[in-house]
Image 1 (cartoon, one colour):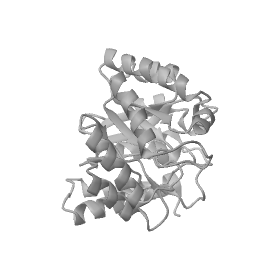
Image 2 (cartoon, one colour):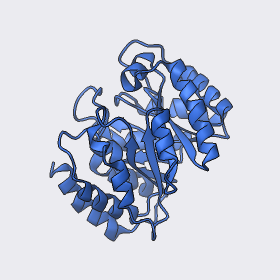
Image 3 (tube, one colour):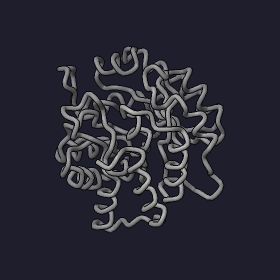
Image 4 (cartoon, rainbow, N blue to C red):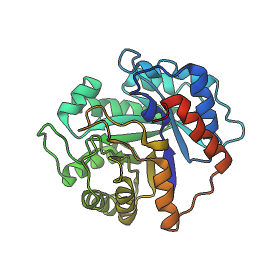
Length: 283
């Protein structure tokens, strides 16, 4: 089981700016926990996401000498991808491709057709620089705009990505409306149809919903799950402010109950939980 910790997703929507030195301390602690991958920052417009304007500086302060955790950076366009591939420490580039035309325009100011063109360019760039592209299928479980949606449509997007050479794809529950039944149905369809693809689950949930969603993804065969300590973050387009990322601690509880314990460094984990109070507040 691959557990992807997403402090970037958790921090990016905060109303206050997290000081760079605190970001570095928090991320360095997370690097010692033993996650498979750390979604640590993004190379996007500082006007669009002010919280991530110091990503390059944060990266320079990370200690990767004693960790096996790999780094993932989010990019929103070709310019960001060109920045990201310039850093040896970054293993994965993540790009949000929306199943919803409306959300693609709102999120990246591009059409889906234009976004696919960028994916092709990013995939070529990643291959050239020995990186891997992770495509997040935003609105992967439906959308609030009335745009077309079905598991078959997600499958069509996946087919196009596979043809471009993308092999890591994460359907994303952008607004927290997925259900265990819908999760199991979508991933079951995708895993049967595209056995060569590593599918990840990037889900959002209200309090009390995380365990059911994680179990549904696992039943479908998903072995890559994104989370964030204490469930912070989530999309501002969500129905309410209680909808956030899957709390990592709840994912770990489910994995343990289901017989998938992870060999994490609990001392570093506890330190990260304490530091999260400084980053996000006591709430």
